[in-house]
Length: 52
Image (tube, rainbow, N blue to C red; front, side, top):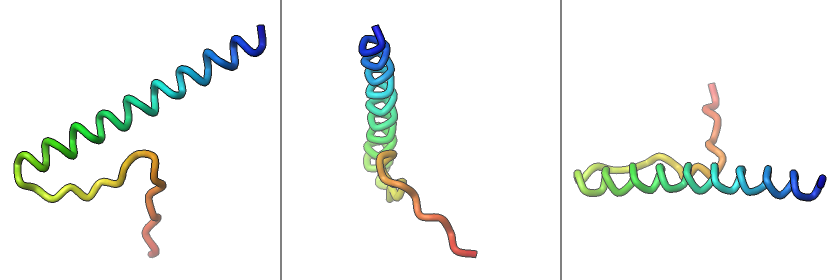
């Protein structure tokens, strides 16, 4: 039963990551179609913290 719950949690996490990447890619393509530069990093890459 524990393995089943772990698999469900992993499946939900995988779905969330896929949806984040798909949304990012959609924004990237929309910007490209408008001829705009797209600088948002993919959601799987950590963003650098500004050094202030």
